[in-house]
Length: 307
Image 1: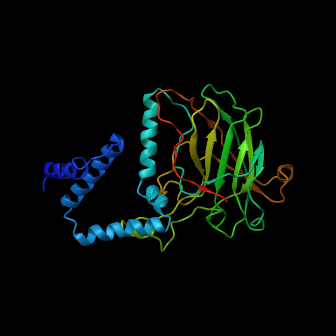
Image 2 (image 1 turned 45 degrees about the vertical axis):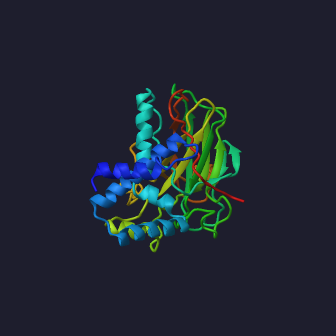
Image 3 (image 1 turned 135 degrees about the vertical axis):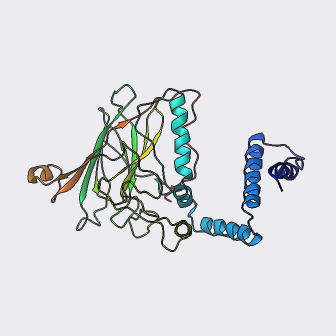
């Protein structure tokens, strides 16, 4: 079949059969996606076996809760961000901290504090390097933003996230910090490790067939919100990581790799209440103003929540 015939067939299947009330946007998206799929099947001469094995693969990946990894690993999540950047630039919004992907491992409801939070539960203190992570939240005019909500989360030294890794305590390495009167936030934690897709999982199986690895560099995630400001979803990478610019999820961006200062001075260590050298990272955040006519920066994506 040629593409014109496919378009007519899809119209017959999904438009001409409508007898009840139609949601025009859902119909438009569905017809386009189905038509594109049919054209791919025709153009690539996919066999029935390939079509149904592909369907089974997606079903099994969803059952394994890997769709979030698929979205990141195939570039879908990064593509959505690229379009968001373009929309903001078209609206004249620029100069903010770069956005990057959320990933699938956020957990709603992390403990909240003002100004400072201890993020780790101490379980890895014997072998992990301490980390002091701090900065200031600014608006587009360069003014500090007091009472901004800074949600921060990261993995442990094995690259695992609490809630999803049941061996960790609740909300280990997940915190919400409200900035102080000067817009500052500060967190004490440990230097995280990067992670890889489950080696026997569906995402890695597909990446193997594509000749790709499934590794991420060590990183720390952020949500930042404040009244009158556009929500920022971003993350920083830990400088020096092997996969710093080779992230399977395409989340690495200029401006999101702050310097890591290795602090060995005994007085400085003691001043932080620590007993060994630590990594010090300063990451300031610049928000963009909420602007009428630009897409909503918050989305209704389904996220994990602790019971």
